[in-house]
Image (cartoon, rainbow over all chains, first blue to last red; front, side, top):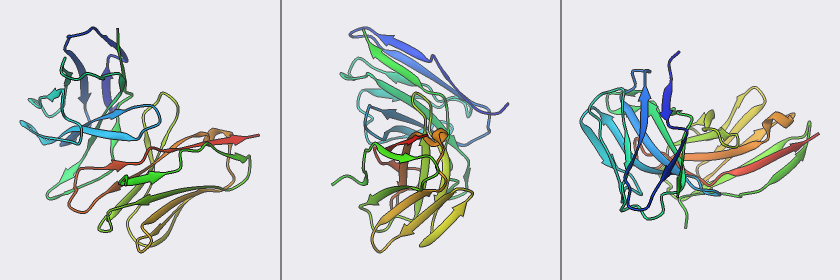
Length: 116
Length: 112
């Protein structure tokens, strides 16, 4: 079945530790995104990538890093510089045609990150 | 001012009633508008998209857009307990291709 797979479902981070959240899609989508969701708040964009080897900062990129070495994969690293990392992290993808984007986002099942 | 605003709720409606969810946005040049449904602990799923003024119907769902008032709404007819979820309004602002801006969501509770 085509879809987006996020792992792990739950992740715990110790002080000063970097952790990496995995996101893999087999939908052949060009664009991939990382969102953060805090309780009572909407989704906020961390990073997005329209093509392999290219990515742009979203609204809250500080303390996060990404890579896009393969079309299928867009891992997110939460660095020790992110002082308040506890949140629900959602990866999404969409199909891009030329200069426009099919804005329908397909979401993974999410990763809940907590600080020990 | 937040870019996309929604009443957080909860909005409580009886089964079979019409649920009306509202959303306002700040960027007058926005062109694309979406409603996502999110069950607790799950990822959002797209239920409606609307691009031009007026109404768009899909089954029990109707999206309404008024660009002059910068207002988009979602009506759910014959509400069912299974509709109980958080509904997120999302907007692509002018020049913001690839950048969906989400509201905080409205929690809907449909009681039998």
